[in-house]
Length: 145
Image (cartoon, rainbow, N blue to C red):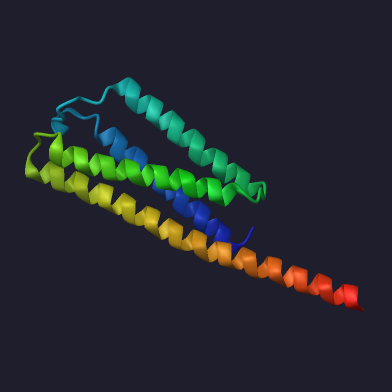
């Protein structure tokens, strides 16, 4: 596995960890949400997020070509989740401003991690495309001989 692939997977794991951290923090009473997040909802979100991320990571380890595209969809979905959590803290919470700012900072950091993941994924895609082009060129050179 290439170093670039390892970086993409590493940052996907960081994305998952941050999403789960913020998700579980949202269940705490001091968030004073207008609609309290139930523990069962947090468990369900944890399982679903874990399955989505881990499935795409497993596909990447198995060298399934579409795996990084699927991972991009997962990261995009959970980026929207971070945005939703950010919005919820400012529109659906009566917590004090310190709590709101800390949660906003954590959500914003999660969004930044996900955007960084996309930068790494696009670089990896360029590497894959370059390798594919080189293979085709070498194959054409061999056919001409």
